[in-house]
Each structure stands twice: as structure tokens, then as C-alpha cells.
Length: 285
Ligand code: SAM
Image (cartoon, rainbow, N blue to C red; front, top):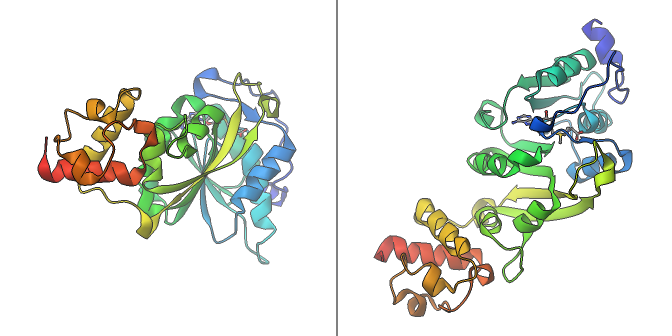
């Protein structure tokens, strides 16, 4: 098929391949098949032709196709809807190449965990139905590029999204909540049931959106000290912070910071963690 034939093919028309793709467990392949959820996700993203969008793990293009259609709806005469995608599975990359032109899809074959997001123009919108086995490492990797990111919309395991979005005092509050919320606005959008995928996964999923806080981002004096303190507090989450952070914070810290030393980690705000980290960074234990 030549590229003009491909580009004239509506993005919403899936190409039929000679043999069906067999989902690979090692790549976390649970493909979205429920059109109503695919549409709700694309509505939440609300893509525009001027957006630079990177999709992680396009797979069989369930989201990709709908994203391109949504962008096309806003394109002017002669404009082509386009996306960047990073996909690790070379069989799926080969299929994507037969269905889309290079103008529609800039395909980066490889591991998203090694992808240099700085090679793409910013501000970048990052989206994806992420492979659950690598979702936390991808999130932490993307944090390194927060200045280049406009926003991120991901499908993740519901349990992970609940931890990401948990506010202080909620049971699900953990290291992930604090390490994301001090720099991103984290909003859980909606749940997606296992029946929306093939093969059907064992767990529920949710859509989450993250937007860098920009000026409102908290700026600990020393990010490493902050991260160590958050980790220590949640590693012993049942202990009072007086105990779990005893090795870091001098005994006078709690009174000076007006933080209850008997509090448990999940009750503390991001601001409180930054205050403790800054106290430690300046005074030391
Ligand atoms: N977006 C498709 C959908 O919603 O149906 C596929 C989602 S599937 C859960 C995850 C996709 O990510 C698969 O296509 C898989 O091959 C790809 N993938 C897995 N690990 C990856 C990695 N480290 N880097 C890039 N893509 C990866």
C-alpha cells in the first residue's frame, strides 16, 4: 500500500491484518475494545491540531485511531492530524506502519523507560493505556521532564490511581501520592471495568490526569532529602513520624514546625513534608 492510499484511509477504519495479534503478557498487553470508554478517554484528553501529543504504547491503535479522528475534526483544509507514539513491540510497530502514514504517526520503536522525551518539542501532552507492570517507573521517569510537559492522561490500575490521587488523611495516601502531588495536580477521572479490554485483565482500571503545578509547585531546598524523608515516613507508615523520621529530624523540629510528632505519615500534607525536609536540610539531625 502506498502512503497516499494510507492517508486517504480514514483513521477510524482499522486495517485487517492477515493474522490476529497475540497479546504478549510480558508487555502488559490488554487492549481496549470498548468504544464507549475509548471515546470517554479521548473526550477527557480533548486533543487539538496544535497539541504535540505522545502516546505511550499505542498497541493496536484503539486510542490512536480515535485521537487522530478527534484531531482531524478540528483540522483546517490541507492539515493532517498527527501524533508521536512510542511502542516496544516490533510486531505492533510493523502493523502500525501498514495502517498509518509517517505523516500521521511518528513512530518511535523502543522502550518508553529509555525514551528521551526532551527530543520532542514542548509543551508535550503525554497519553496512554500504560502497561501496568511498568506504570510507576514511567511516572517517575516523566517527572524528570515536568518542565516540558503540558499534561498527562493515563489509564492505570485503579489501585495505583487511588494512591496517586489520595489526599492527606485518606487510607490510600502513600509515597506515590506525595511525590506526585507536590509538583502535579492529580485528578482521577473515571473507572474502567475489566470487560473493556481483551484479554480481560484481573484488575480494575482508572483514568488519571496530571498537570504540572508550574508556579504553585512546591520547591524543597533539597529534593533528595525531601524524597528520602517521604520514603522513610511511608516505609514505616504505621509508626508516628517522631519514630519513623527520628533518624532525620532533630528533636526540636516538631515544636518549631508546629507539626504533631505523633502524627502518622498519611495525615501529612505535601507542605508539611517540605517543611520537615527543609528543616533537616538546614539544621540536620
Ligand atoms: N493503547 C493500546 C490500547 O489501549 O489498546 C494498548 C495498551 S496495552 C495495555 C500497553 C501497550 O504498551 C502495548 O502495546 C505494549 O506493547 C506497549 N508497551 C509495553 N511496555 C512498553 C514499554 N516499555 N515501552 C513502550 N511501549 C510498551
